[in-house]
Length: 304
Image (cartoon, rainbow, N blue to C red; front, side, top):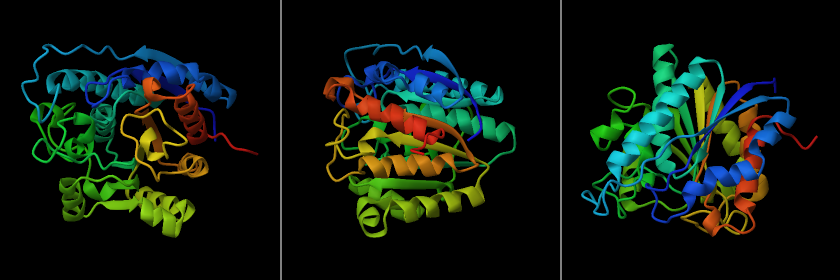
């Protein structure tokens, strides 16, 4: 991989999650030398610090089916602005999370850049969860379970209309890898919208190499810009315990690296986020260290 100008930003927010601590994820990833590993690959890395996240305005939650929505909307608006500006400046953006509601902002910012430059956008979503709930279907009210719905134009207008009004992504330009905990309303939406997905039983039967090759070949043929959103709970919690919503039976260490190593070879891969690192739930920073390794794999690190 050629040397890149890479810009990193932290998104220290846990308002979209059901458990505290994921706001410390960016710090844990920095301790794991995410920037240093990228520099060792020959990239020039600019660390832009952290997005400023305001605390809840009130102890009371006025909308229990989309908790802390105003605060999350403001934070995601800032992240969207950063992604667009970073891409406009010709840099490769990487956001460190932080709960997965941040993808509302990252995808919005990437979509705004693509829209302005006449590019089509595709998203690879590596996650144990589908994150396609709406306020009407959510069992928890946690917005980190809603970003895909918002990106597709479903959800509160304050979230859907970040950067510009309306959907940020076409369903045909989205692929899931790693699903194994999907709510009933999410399953209905995935089937109704005919979204491509590879759940863990598919990975068990077909293997990661065949699946990631197929996904990237399809998306690359359809889009100009591929954004990768990698949730650390896609990985089995015996390997990556520091996540807020662990589900056994996930990707192995090598499967996760193979996904990112293959992504690195995709010419359309232009932006990245790695989310849901929770140091409070981790063991000696194992999950953050793996997350930093995976980012390095996505940016060209190889065994030989």
